[in-house]
Length: 230
Ligand SMILES: [Zn+2]
Image (cartoon, rainbow, N blue to C red; front, side, top):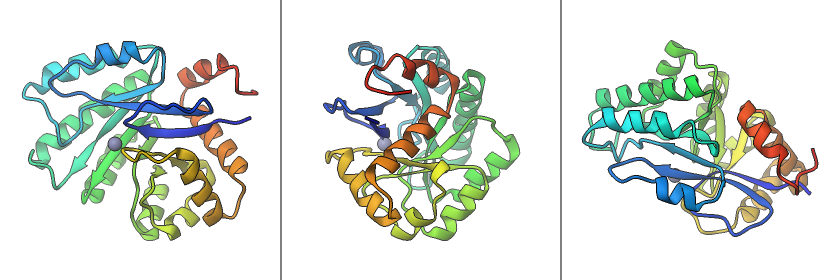
C-alpha cells in the first residue's frame, strides 16, 4: 500500500501510513532535542521570514550543520513575505543564503511566499537552482500557478486551495500538505482526488513518486521503509 505523502507539517503524525516532513523553524532556540526525539522521522528546517533571528550569520552556520543530519530532507520553510516586519532586502539575503545551503546539500527547498511572487521568480531565474523548489501552501489563482510551474516550481496544496489551480497543476509537480491544520491528510487526498477526477490511490502513487524523485537521500531513506513496495 502506498503511503500518504505530507510534504509540510508542523505536527508529528500518528498515522502509520503517512510520510510527513516535519518542519522546524530555526530561530533563537535549538531544535536539536526535538529532532533527536523524532527518532529518524523526516524533517525540513529553515529560517522563516517571520522569525529572522538577531544573529542570522550564526543561525545560517547552524542550519548548514543541521542540513547534513541523516533525516533532514529539505530546507524550509524559507522565503519572502511582504507582511513580515523584516525589510525585503534582508529577507532576500537570508533566502538566497538558504537556497545556497540547500543546493550544496542537494536538498529541496520548501518556500513560503506572501505577495512576493515576482521577487521569488526573479531570484529563481537569476540563480537557476538545480534543486527542486516547492511552493508550500499554494492558494493562488491558476494564472499564477501556471507561471510558477513554467518557471520550474512544484506546488504544494493544503486545505485552503483554489480548485482551478488544483486542476491545472501537472501531476509531476504536485504535493499535498497539512501545514498547521489538524485534520488528517487523508481528507485532503479525498478532496483533491475528486477535483482531479482520479482515485486516491493514483494520487498517492503520484505524490510518492514525486517525493522519491526529489533527491537521492530520500530514495535511500525510503528503501528502508517496510510498508513501501518499491
Ligand atoms: Zn508551515
